[in-house]
Image (cartoon, rainbow, N blue to C red; front, side, top):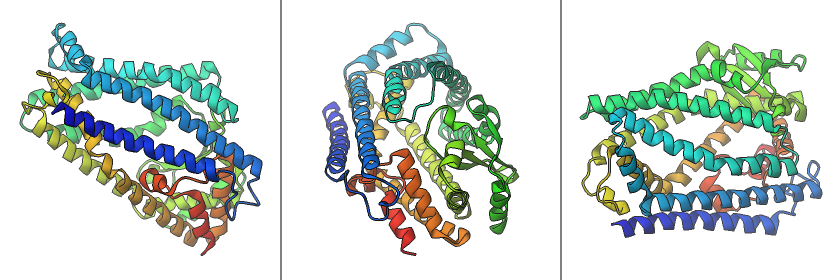
Length: 410
């Protein structure tokens, strides 16, 4: 049984790394070609820099991924999971205490192992291509705050989930699902007010007249917004973005200050019109419902399989605690759900095209969105030449060259 599990795991890894290799080779072969419609905005030098940036990120991702996959293989199949499970059991911490310790220690070890890669990404790779604006002090402060928040929320959520599992052994899957969904909704409500301000400074828009135009555009489609803000993203990175957050009358528009520097007022409005398209088409709500349905299925399946006698034998273990069994199920879920990746990617790309169509009708100038995408691609050194198969499998957004071509064909 373990042999079959290993073969499935290695097959998934081989496919993943094969696609990445295909994508990298495609970029090396085509990376010097300026796409149609991009010639006026992107010079050959910038395109070469974008290709080098994409390849550098891919190499770092390959090293990080190989390290993570090797450690995962050793932990699951090399006897470390069984050793860790037995070692922790000797402390007799009880069901809730033992579970919290089991998963918290694993999470902390994973976070510590990720630190070298994050440091290199920020202070070598992003620095080399002109994106990093962080100091080591700021990075360390963000890391400490993130870890403290993660531990706090994990302890609260984990203790509640483990209590439900112990208290309702026959129906815990439904109660835990409700807990997870409720916690996710709560975080969406409180994050803009309690968590995001710990990392970023939000302030009113400084671009004269832009807030009024944003509110007027939203009024056209029957939506209102409580605040229109800009955030000091440039303190950390040169990358740009914009997003909506909040529910009901508490919706907020947030614009990166880097975006305001890179785009004209009309281009910013076109980008926000695209985001409004997601709201009016209920893409966010549909995605939340889909994720909730998937979570419900996984919770039910976990309840069904967690006590299956032969479950530990799938990874070569004779006996395993509830927590170790949960780790095994989570590992298997990652393998078995991998073939669904292109399906969810395709659904996401469909939503993006629908939002583009909505933006063109609302804003009235498809060229503004097209030039905004071109400019953002230039400023963010986006990969303009992904391999079609890689893009179909992984890309949640259509390749930018295809989006721009479709916008300009209207």
